Image (tube, rainbow, N blue to C red; front, side, top):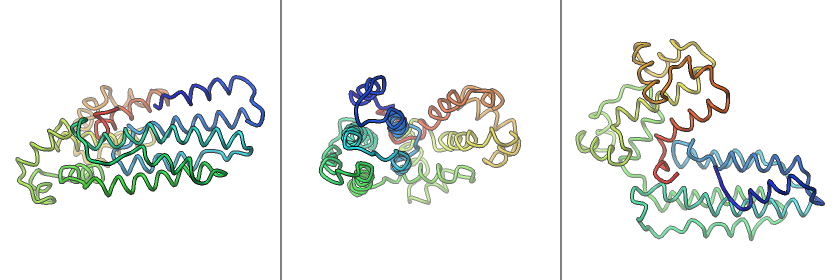
Length: 261
């Protein structure tokens, strides 16, 4: 979650009275920025972009100049902190330098749409992620990981994955392990469990097991416990917040940003 002076100031403001600023509006804004900062639950950069845009769309509109100023400042601080996190997550070596400057885009928030901070925040998201994608060509290993996340229920072999990116299966597996800390097969198992976590509270375990690609309930239980540390029935008994924490930890294992968050 985002930790910032702006958020702390916002919480203190909520506790008192500030002319022209509605307490309910402040609470709602704080909630959306905190949700938007939970980028570790997104499996890749595109997922992060979607998450931030989704939360930005849910920010209630300001009705006064003080509210617009507060929202503008929080948006700028959010962009200043999140941008480098997302960018650094694309580099296996945290010391790597590529010339991309993630903080320069904050000016889009400060210099444009002063009467509509939400529109300025959305414009920052689109410009930042568009240029980030252009500056960082997706590697063959990341293409394989994206395929496994998008289609975790399919039957994948090292040979089939290698054919997708014209890479020898043994070399692919070696480089994949270096990048993600696990083999493609292990990564797919995590992706399947992450998919199952979104279904297991609404459907029977047997149905979920089959849906995510397991031929036997036993294999599904084994994978579920290995990824989450608990059985499906234990997960079903968790509180909503506890369940979100489990989902976040599991999804983190798929994330490009797992090295820096």
